Image (cartoon, rainbow over all chains, first blue to last red; front, side):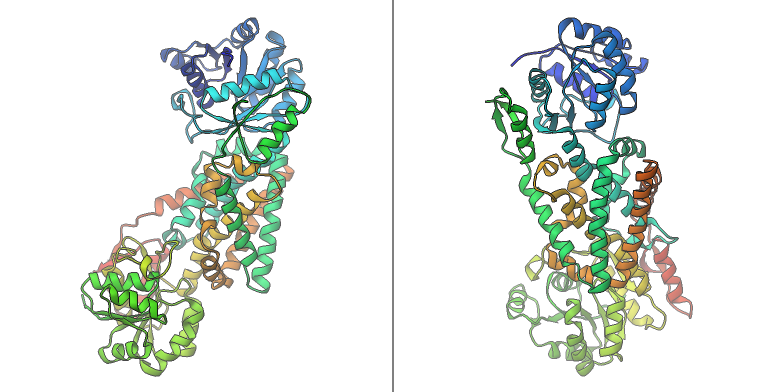
Length: 314
Length: 314
């Protein structure tokens, strides 16, 4: 296993946790943040984090370190312009929750970077350096993009960083990742919002007084800060539209059956089967792979498609 | 407080828990079940439960006991015919999860009964006598129907039974109850089913491999036995259609906004506000009331509408 140094741009919940986790794993780590206050907090905790993004990137270029972009999507173009100016061919990954939009931004603003997208599927309702911790990624799925044409050597860097942080690696094409998270993460947030709005609609509180665990669970993520939900969902618009339309089609068919025959069996049984399939798909065993040869990336994508994860080199 | 005797028809999860809870509270209790096996189990646990419904009802008529119907909705007409034949003017309540359909059935099959509908909002995924327990109703909301024209003396009987079982009493008109549970209980089951089906749709398991807590929580109740969900939702068809149409309207508006401007703020903020209103409405303080005079039932309904509960006599 290489022990490649890691440069993290952004020191919020994800970037801050990544700095701590990689440090704990014995890596040389440093970073940069746009916020004086954040840099101060990070330095007080013993981390080499400043506010000079160019300096951090230059050091990465000099040492062939892996650069991880852990900044919100809207800030990405600005950061990528610095990458292109200071570390144009660096090893580059990211921790943003959508993958097609990030790949497009990299192609546009830092086209020479050796880029492999990433998405550690971990988070809390909190944000900022103080909310981070070095175990945030333990046992999480960490998606590593496996589109054709990318640099296998950088793919291995990103996978090894994920393992060092305690995650399992789920390889996926960028567009398949975006559709998957639209279905299982973004759509659940929208459903929770609509369910909470229906329950609270009207003038009286009787529905809320009668709400029990099915409502509590079904609306839990509606308690997340709206800004976080909006950043996540709006950044994945195309895939989310597809997921919403799938859901609307099923709801429309259900509505029709309820109005005509009064029967809900098809809806309820499909949902039960889906939930059981999810329960069975949890905690994949994990496979060990070699990545070499022209078919390597296609093989990686197949591992993710069958719900499995890569846990080490074979 | 009266210590009225209680006759429970049906000895499954709800009826069996009710027999145990009322017994624990010092009431004289007996019951009947259609199942030999259930009657045997209940007797082995020391309860006076047989398979002769007529005999149980006759004893209730003789002692002016409160009869509680804890049988599934489809079985209700048959049981109500026995009530009308053997204990036609008895004090009668029920523990079925819809209230308009039950009131209609009583008006049709046992019109002379002194009926006040009830719905203890408690349950587990399990069923049958063995799954029951005497603390099932502790801290639960127990809806007691408060439609005009009912017998206030029987209303008090039902309220006192609910308190004896550890519940708080939420008064509500039958139709308002049905719409409320459609919104906060039945719709969440349908949303969970559709969400689980969307997540499990297609040939690959990548979405399920990436599903985390938002999906787990949003689909939890899709794990309930389909028969239970169908009995509950299909029995509340009219109110459920109204709730589904409300939800579809909101989802349609959200879909339109996502497709046109890409903005989801209205949906997400309304959901966040709804969830916060629910959180604030939990654990009502509880009020003590007198029920007398012509406005008593209207006053009771107002208590439920403002999300409060009755916890004793004032």
